Length: 207
Image 1 (spheres, rainbow, N blue to C red):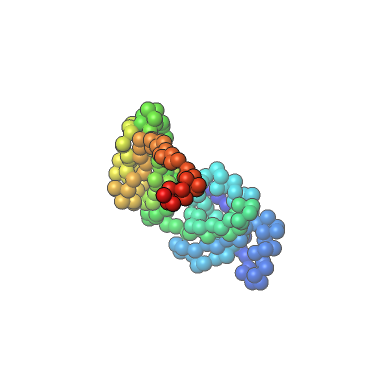
Image 2: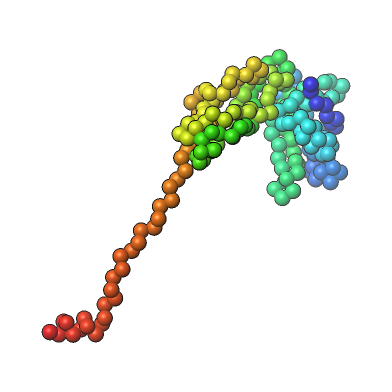
C-alpha cells in the first residue's frame, strides 16, 4: 500500500524562498520522471518524517500535483550537517508496472555458530542493489548467518532467491564472514647489554 503525502507547488525564485520555506516548517523538493515535467514542490517537514519513518525510503509515496495522482520514490535527499534534518528531497515519478532499481539495506540475522566458538564476524557489504516494480521494493534484505562457522563466508549467491525482487549485485560479492580471532603476539624482549664504563674503556685503549 502506497503512502500519501500532501504537497504544494513552489516558486524557485528568489533563492531565499527555500530558507523561508524551511523557517515555516516545510521542505523544498522536486519531482521529475515518468509522465511529469520537473516540478518544484514543498512538503511539510513533520509529515515527511512520519511517512519515511513508518514506511521506509523505498516505499511508494503518492502525491497529487495539479489534480494528477503521481506515484513517486525518494530518489535522493540532503540533510543538515548539524541537525540531521532533511532539507531537500528529489522525488522520482515511477511507472508502477515497470521495474526500477534501488539500494536496500542488508541486515544480518541470527548468531553465527563460529562466533559462539570465538570467531569474529565481519560484515563487508551493507547494502545491495535490487530490481522490482515499485510496489515490491524491499526496505532491507535479511541474511541469516546462523550456520557460519569459523572460516566460512556468505556471498550474494548464497542469499535465497526472493519472489518479489532480484538482487543485481555480482553473485560472488561477499556479504559477511567469520574469521579466527587474531592471536596476540607478545613483544620481543630486547637483549640486555651491560653499559660500557667510560673509564674502563679508556684504560683498556691505553694498554
